[in-house]
Length: 325
Image (tube, rainbow, N blue to C red):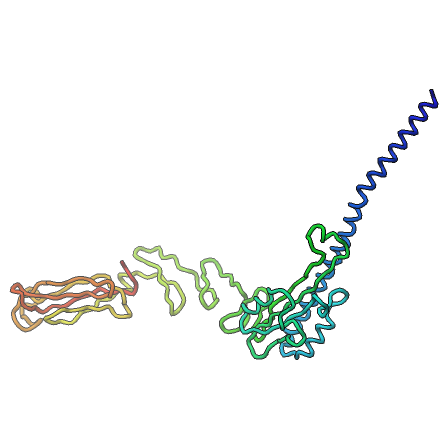
């Protein structure tokens, strides 16, 4: 009985050992695949960092020396990078080309491939004259040492491409500053105090007044870049008289008081001019035409007597510095 029990225990141990071998057979490839993937992608990221640094360094050299010769630039390209990052091997390149506008340079930077003439030692061109924009780009092809990327992405290579635009003869302001119309760098933001506003010159104005008195309105004075409180009917309007004549009289608002507010007409009659000195003759007049022309800011009038003949009259307009209707 004891012998049979010992035999059963030995069989159980043998079975457990067999299951361990099977599990190892399944898990070992996964473990090795993950390990290789970490190593492979780590190397790729290292190459990526080296590529970015090399291209940025070459771009900075061009920016500091925009007149660099092709021979000098080609020598720098040959010596740039290190290890697998070599811009002169097949599938790798460093490109430089001059443009007259930023959009064209950026389009070149966004391009791909090494077939462009500007990617060869005989075609790299940093250009002449100012201002100009030099498009700089480079690429390095990384070859995976394991089949992990091939399995999941369908390719055993990865192209690492980077670039930037190098402005030459153009003022580049530091972070937090912007180029003004005068061509100098200044703070890109100006903070005004409470109640102030930012003028076109980039300075803060005086606080905007609170026009709360009866009849007051807020007006902007472009000559001083300030807001002021005014009383329209008192401060900003004037009376304009048209000519006295026996045909139509026009009272036109001047440029200093450009907006018509209202108007009226005076015609010759015995009540106002008992001596009939307004115009010669003894006509008693009444208005036949009297209306405001707000589109052209003038008041029009024409007087006639009861018999339909001409009668002397005068148009009178009230003109203001701002529009009142």
